[in-house]
Image 1 (cartoon, rainbow, N blue to C red):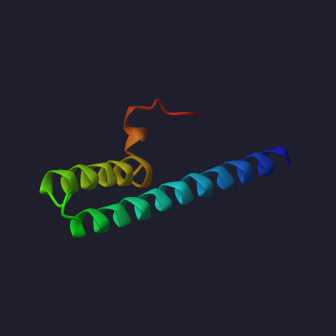
Image 2 (image 1 turned 120 degrees about the horizontal axis):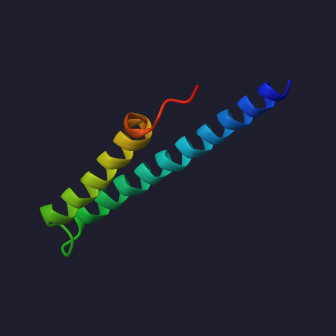
Length: 74
């Protein structure tokens, strides 16, 4: 029974983390939209930096790239 509780807690933590990352990606997308319409920050450099941040979040959290360097747990 304790195994199920731990599993449910892990699942809740995973959903919470995915939700936070998804909200962060949405916020960065909105920031890109504002930057593209701005006279001050419409430089491709700023937009590229935000795009790289978004790509890094997707690769790290949703593609689970961090598992490549982690030892297998048995």
